[in-house]
Length: 147
Length: 247
Image 1: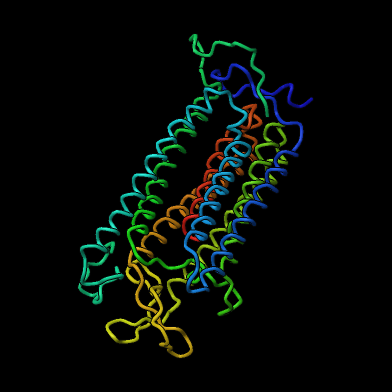
Image 2: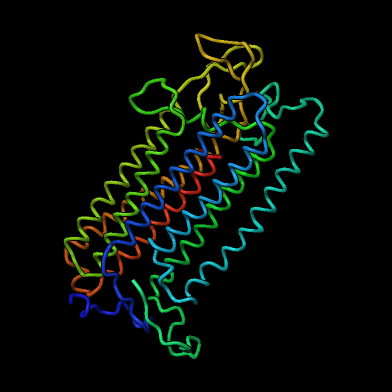
């Protein structure tokens, strides 16, 4: 066997990784990623079709968008776990990468909340441009201003 | 790839790394984690600003062109191609890593070369898309006058439609939120820069493989580290694709 002479890459490795026998798992993951991407595209085009109707239901669109977010997280899981081989590492290694990412839970929730509140406040108090965030005279805005 | 560890093995008893990976690979993981937070901060700031607006352009209207198809309305088609190219190059990269585990130099060379081709194809697509957005003029109603605007960091022709107002066969829109272009070009540009540096790293790895450096070293771990970076680029695209094109 070729990999019996496999040299351990560094002294930090106590138990060397055994190379995979074939590429079956790689191709299986490829098909999973491809199918998820197709479903995501179908969702995107469904939103496009729904938007053509002027009185579309916001909650349906929001539901589809939520589904797309979950599908993207599934794709991320497969890429990290199989392609980046994090799933093959020992538990300590997996946790040192995954646990800090939990900060994103707060990060996303807090900032989306903030953006939403910002819009509500502006709609309530900025009476000169009701229902519109782009000012009537764009040239009075400083370049790069966010609203 | 699998690791056999005896049950109840004490990783924290000292004298060894509790992570069972080389220093270089561990640091590559930590670098990628920090890069995740950089991209995360960009995407979350984009989401925050978008949330704060009453109107935001529908990506299906902004991204509906395909090279060679003129003004045909093909929402999401081109970005699907870009996504497919990047997934495919991720597969060729992991195949190169697989061949590296087996110490098969020819296999590593072949798959690294295909990964580089995929990266260059993606960059070419992005160059086309940027050019299309920056040079594509659209009629916009500004101060009661119809002006031709393109999508740049200072202009956004993708606002709400002016009902019933047409200009040379095109629906006239109002200016959209100014932040759209800055976020789009900023974040896809930052991602594109990662793709570019990934292609350069992969090119260096291909040259080092051809020169036989990894055979002399006795392992192909550098291919694995370059692979981690390349997969990360694909991973970020999953979320750029989600935030700019799908939702």
